[in-house]
Length: 192
Image (cartoon, rainbow, N blue to C red):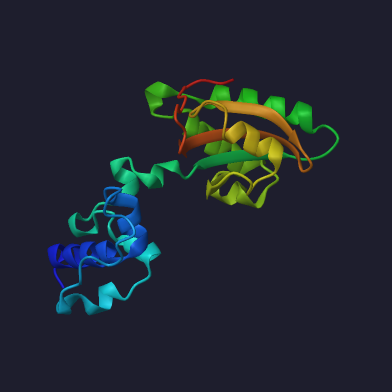
């Protein structure tokens, strides 16, 4: 099925659903039930529940995702970060030493910025299994990490080295790579 035809089917099926029509129709037309029927070549699409129809309308026919167009997908908050974990009784001092090492490892003329410096230090010194990936934790939503970690990742500046941050696991240095879903995403390039 072509992308354009698929979009037409999705649009027809969504228009036939009560949920869609009550959201997007003028008040005088709401509650009128199904006012449009899907063409016969759309039978497999028209049978989908409204929740999948809404996702299907994310300009799929053009190959775009709704989030890339500034739609509902942008409201879902998530972040991407790396960290260096230092455990033990001297974790605060160790974390501060590693922060200095990260900063000292930055060499812009050689093409080694904050992310590269952080990754190198994390691979050598982090106590977390993520050390093998340069401390990279991937993408996550609020509540998936401990509260102290979440507070930093979802409120502080992106592209900045943060820490030491104390959690139940020890002290962390955190580098926030990106964050989505914020009305005002702060960006920086330094250490804070």
